Length: 137
Image (cartoon, rainbow, N blue to C red; front, side, top):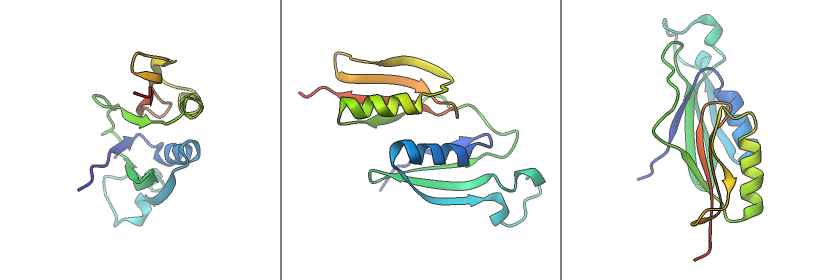
């Protein structure tokens, strides 16, 4: 059994996934638009190019997502996507890239009692992230 996060976007799924793939070195495995599905009366005509289902692979894990039906979007809350990174340099690179244009920086990247580097933020697409580079025990 695998548990995969499924993210919802308010029309920015394709942009977000391309950004995440570029920054994280992930592979876009699927990107299906609403025009690829049977007709849906609830879907506005200008929404046909939005993403109905997407999937990226990263380090043996998948993140899935879609653009939610207009009017049904809720800002994510109650979780973070956490990246456990092996080196300080990579943690700093990823934090800097993913947090560019962030909606909120909850904790700037820095050293903590458990981590060489740790930071938390909500990116420009509304996805909450934690970047963690643990201290060697």
